[in-house]
Length: 312
Image (cartoon, rainbow, N blue to C red):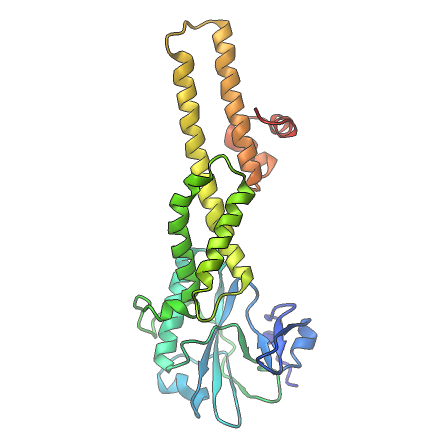
């Protein structure tokens, strides 16, 4: 086994791996590197772009198309088919913590590289020929990792075709756009329900969309996308809806009533009941006590007291 320390350290700690593509297993990294195929990107993160070239001179397709040298190529010595792998200097997150614009940009670059090298458009960029396994003919071409802007100069950046949206990183973009447009209106039907009920509904819809892909995305990426969309819509809708209720309550308390200490107390009570309701909503969205206090303009102790008591 050829150990390439700089590549080994970038691999997931417990990657999927196999000697037979029909039987993927999860193993510790030190065990996984002994198998022919290995997961090269960590969950919900794209560190490497891998191109699957089904051609007898596949390892040199990048040079034929005047592309920059890849990090490495791993070639099948029997038929010449190869994986060409580019390393990203700035990895792109594909979970709720990442930028959707960066993901769309990466998807276009990946599709451009696939077109330029005539690589397999159906390849999922999930499992690669293990560059450290003796079965493959591996060549390290450079130690340089590239920024997306640099790779973009070598490819034709165009909107993804319908077919490209069904594969690779195009699936992430399609899933995000399809589910979010559905969620913008579906959230209205969940007013008065819990965060968990709403999240489960979004996750179920995301799973349905994912099943339309010929090569579905891993469940971890489905969960991340669903959580991102659910959290955004829940926070956005709950905030504006509660603001509307609060404004209506203020109008009602002022309408035709003289200002006195009793009415002032009622107004203050309504105001704080509304803030308590918002505090509960923000807690369900995993906001910290300090974040909730800052958002609502009250002390940390007040928030802790509110959350200990049931809301009215």
